[in-house]
Amino acid sequence: MNYFELFSFTPTYQIDTALLAERYRELQRAVHPDKFANASEQDKRIAVQRTAQVNDGFSTLKDPILRAEHMLSLNGIDLKHESTTVKDTLFLMQQMEWRESLEDISDSSDPDTAISDLHESFSDYAKQIAEELSGLLSSTNEAELIQAADLIRKLKFMAKLQIELERIEDALFE
Image (cartoon, rainbow, N blue to C red; front, side, top):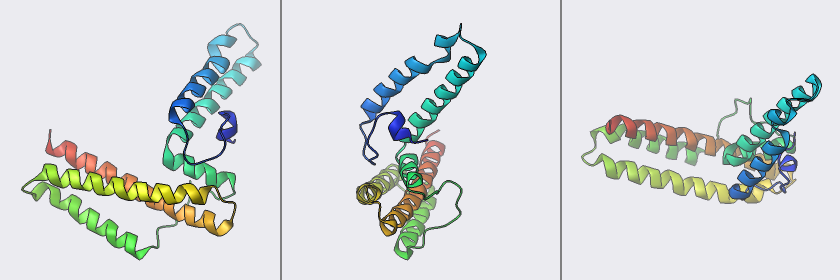
């Protein structure tokens, strides 16, 4: 299913999340199973299915990584069940540095600054990737879409690092 069509959006990486939320509420009101309480069993089932589609679409489009994966899937590239890893050695080296920095936080004399610096570093890198990704995802050129897939893989790594940083932060300040 094309979630962009469901929510009446042009398929682009950058979307108006406030408008997405507004359209989500509109769609929910239109298809919510409670509206079909007196309908036939088939209509009730359809309403439940449509509600699930709306919920899935909203979750997909509001998350930048899932949105990017969805855009690729609309172009025939499925990343959801793949095991391909990032081959960019510079990125892998940067990731190793970040992991070392994560490990060093608990021994740091100033963990607040170390955490803040990593948050900033992750954010800056993710923004850089997102900007590049935005242009690539609007393409129909296979080589550019493959480049976009590599960037999405990097964003997934970044998301895992961010989760790890938040876990460390929570553990330090409990």
